[in-house]
Length: 449
Image (tube, rainbow, N blue to C red; front, side, top):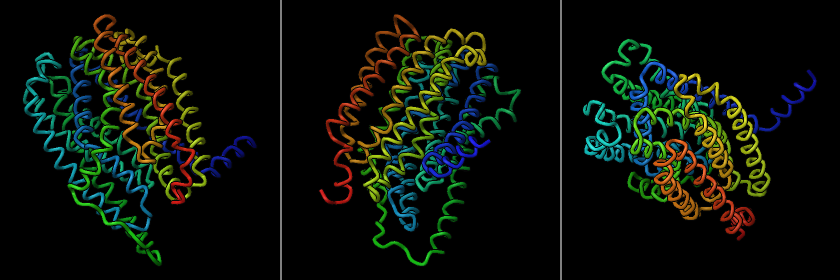
């Protein structure tokens, strides 16, 4: 009891660790709900239909990410850096970001409608109704609303709600609709329409949650005696897009690093193998769920420390790095030991993906190890170097996917991901030290360069 009490006291005395633990719990809830969705998909639908739905989910979330053009990254950067009393700036910046995402989403929805016949033929083997596929494009807008509102909550340090909104909310709405339409779920590709409607509901709910915390924040600011001076003016719609574009490649290339192999498996192989690889890749993404929980805690504080408490940047950076590596390594080893049982839960046919899963788990650990190093490129406004690294790793990923998938199937796709993530980690660490991103940070941040 003494050991437990002492451990709890140590956790309470370290805000970063405590907030990280709460974020991990929230992420774990999101992981559980998302895997409940996938378990229902793989056990309720045949392999071909399961492959169709999992591939569609990859497309919609990916195109949504492309359409944001880094708006969510800019929102996090500016809101997390602003003083908590600058409520008007936070509100106006969020509204400008929402208008930008609305415009960009409509453009990409139009592109989805035009490309739907091609996508249906080459990725879905002409097996899904075209009208269902076209309507699924609406999900691009509403998924973006979920992400943007969740990002805002994380930036104002409502981390747990932000994490739950981004990961658990779409799963919750989908599960509710599946329960309501259980008998129709697997009939005549009705699952596509349910998925689309679930994203619409999630987007609407996300707006309501953000509104609640915005009103709460406004009341808190009004109760203070005075506001910090020199609040910045929030930019307009087009200025938000202009400022976001340099940050977009980080998100886009990161997505392609994760999902290019799934899309290329869909191109080269049949939908049954797409289902196998999608299950293996999504199981490996559990590591990334934990990583995103740490990101939600670390990134806003890293930005704030750099801007306002730079003398502690060095210790905070290495403390955060050790936390990331320790948590992710533990999760990776645990999942590898249980890989047989995990895959068996999706159905006996999915045990064929065991070797691919082992390779992907190692690949995601290597990717996770680069997290805090990557943040410093953004904090120090040297994103171009990060983009160069991501492009190099993506090229390696695509090159080895084209070669290895045709010879080794889904194991070849997993190997390509492992090679690409190893390349990513190596290049990021080398450039991190060559650019001296941490060594000179305190002087520059304090304006004493």
